[in-house]
Length: 163
Length: 213
Image 1 (cartoon, each protein chain N blue to C red):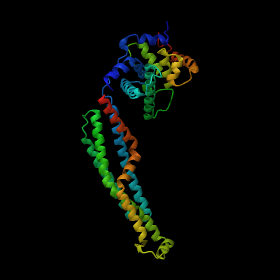
Image 2 (tube, helix red, strand yellow):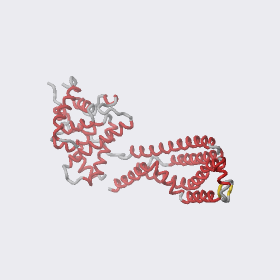
Image 3 (cartoon, rainbow over the protein chains, first blue to last red):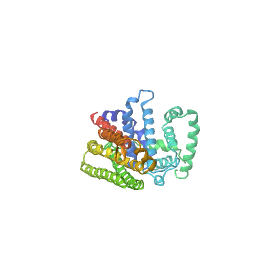
Image 4 (cartoon, rainbow over the protein chains, first blue to last red):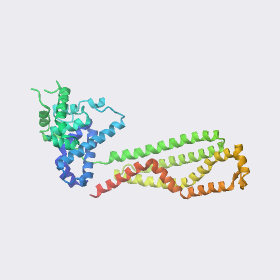
């Protein structure tokens, strides 16, 4: 990957990649692995981008796909099959960010199912329902209800933790 | 006052220092290790499978009344395992201090040499195993009264109680196995390792492209 590609195409959208990778990983080591794999995949797929959407949307799509694939592989390796919860080690509180509330929010997001994590991240990034549906590959009609349900779940998880 | 998740999110990411960008170095370190470890593991399993098969085969051939043929195949298989283990030891000569790209290239070269060496051995292995595998059939035909009488009354020229043309067919097949031994071995190897080989090739090609850009 050339420095130019990294500087011009990835770095302006690096926040997206970091935010998504953080939601799917539980350790700094995993986060760095996921981040590198996402960057590599963005570079690999650069020729498939034909301005059918914004570049940032493309980055979201790739980041989510890569994270979901890596998580699936990791689960397979650990022979862990429960879909909506995480292994005990991942329930430990993270300290990836300086802001304590943000860390707690991330811990809560990590307790959601893989797809719900993607949906809520996109919602928090102020993507429209249609954009979320396009990125996730689902119907826009269900997104609103889904977000409401996810927010309720997050509220329940975070209840009493955040002031 | 309780904060909404939107507020936590926006406030949390207000500070530009929140997002620390990881360095993109050693991009392929872990991947190289994963793929070479996988290949090493697969080779090890392959050797264990051959040993188990050789032992079971020994018992089977003894039960079929041809223990010598069973022992012959057993020693041939053990020879193959010994050769594989010796080759695996030479893997240690690959310099691990090299960059991921150089290491994978060296590993790939080692793999190609190992396959080429094995091909030479397997060209003899396949026909010999084939001939030994025929022994239980020969034994069964000779010990079966009906088949034995049919062969004896057939009027064919016989060698060791079996029609000469049957021996000739077997030898022709064995010779063909020797001639096409390399191809058979490649097919055999690809059956087990093809996916990993392709992955390794793609990884090297991609790393080369990354270096050139």
